[in-house]
Length: 337
Ligand SMILES: [Zn+2]
Ligand SMILES: [Zn+2]
Ligand SMILES: [Zn+2]
Image (cartoon, rainbow, N blue to C red; front, top):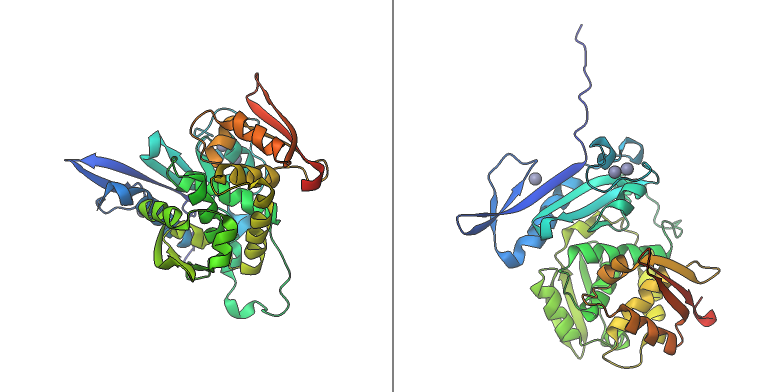
């Protein structure tokens, strides 16, 4: 009689490193045996993310088989905290100024304690385990996280996936792209929608192309713009497009009160961000200043100025920064809740 031994499943944690070797930039994966792949500096970030995403897509598992990989390694990826808690999701983390990228299953508590990290948005990978024929198209009801959670997940994911100096305009466009793309990672915006975003669409598209995040297929012009996303990590999303589009519409509506002119993208972005992170009933919110600035791409100390302007334009009722904790506390104006 032959005994079947169960092999322990390989852990769901993958790390790639960008190394300089004899003047060339090389992408080295700790899990792949082959030699490093030569990449250009401009393509390095997207090549690293695409490689990690391929590993994650090649290893789909039911949720109950996924464990916190941070915990399994003694929580060495972050400062001490009180232990694992919350659901397990895919966490993208960046170390050493973008030279090391890691994608791993992690719990919410470990994720919150890890610097320079974001959950890969909307990762209902278990949904991909059922064959499409078993899913009902007609009886589909809204499911998954709320609009606010989807928007905040995408914004913090973009903070990890896009270069730190990406403008607010480009982030607003990337948010809409990520929420509206189809299963082939294509997205098309009619001219009217671009106008309601009030951004310089050509400049924002250029910026996202330079970051290797998307390719413009058509436009931008009188008919709008069509683009193809290159960020394959986003493909891990469940194909629940109506839910994502509702979240995209919510972001578009929520950005409106903060807009007073074409150059107000930072206000619009921070307005959406604060609304997405506010308590629904009280309108109160609390977040570390560093995190807010990172997620909204604010490189300088401009946060108080933008918060003041959001108060003047009727989005916020008030705000304060706690000097001890470095947290910003805010309250939405009654009309914004
Ligand atoms: Zn690999
Ligand atoms: Zn941990
Ligand atoms: Zn954990």
